Length: 279
Image 1: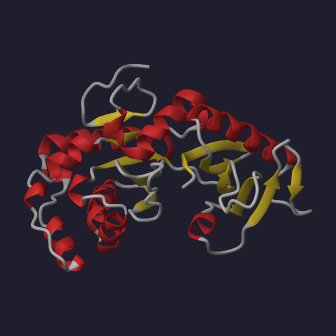
Image 2: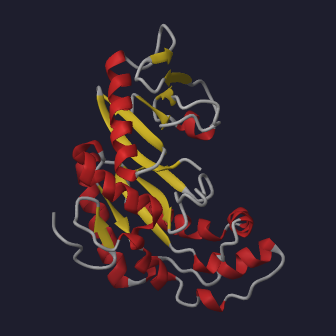
């Protein structure tokens, strides 16, 4: 792996020393890529340095008690990174290189406050799937940036005593996995009712699992590795269930805490899309 060539774009398979520029999700994906290799879809992170360049006057925003007015004030300090000619060329080249590999990419938020043990910010920022052209890429990158200052994010930040001006946004761009089935795995029951490993699965991209909508299946594996709950016509084969269990144990051991893991299976091959601490 080569070292990070500049402070703007970081490819997941590079040897990156300054992980804090990648946000929570991006930093975790770099660790996962080192740990699991090709099980992590290829991609790059638009680092927080570009966000800083797109909002140089952010600190000058005047706080307002009305959350909607404060949101507008913060957004007024934000511009698109594509307005900068040099940055635009760099971003477009990276996008074009990746899009040639798979035809579609996902564009996801990776804020410096995201996926931490203090506060996950899960579902607070914007993320987009199946982006296949440059114009949509430009729009979604800006929309991810703009979601940093949504009224609901400002309210969430206040609960955890986080100054929204201190939030820096990176953006994860990865090859899109057109999954046959996907979902979420918790290395420990997040309800606290047991120490069991919980797998939630759905057909397709698994958005129903993440959003809490649609038909899903729940599989439960106990601490000895035995399946204690699984439907007779399960979406997952015994082999896929074992592989998910084994890889989750590996991730938990490497990260040193219980994990909330997003996964996908395409043509029988397992991919890990992200991991974060259970909060």
